[in-house]
Image (tube, rainbow, N blue to C red; front, side, top):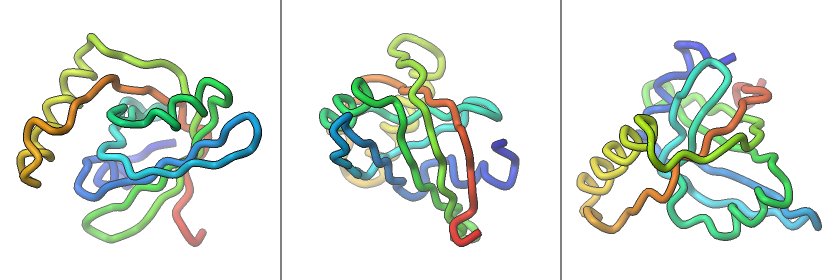
Length: 130
């Protein structure tokens, strides 16, 4: 599902968006620092500040993310299903290091705190406008 064509959009060059929905149908959209490639069928999102997002995922594991390829400006929509969180793994360590680099480049070093690497199954991935 995720191919080499999509990998530049999963490098954290541009912020992404995640939308979740509560069991009652109330949506929540927020900007996210990282959508990280795990394998052809999974991505990990950086869990930093998302109290409403986490609450929604407990009620409803489905989410929707939008990513941008920085080279072509192509946008992709990902239909996701929450799988699990990691707090002590190579994935978490890699994402934490990248998040600190992003923070450092934006003058926010020490502000961002990765709480978990939230892993999602990618149910579909579509180019915006297709």
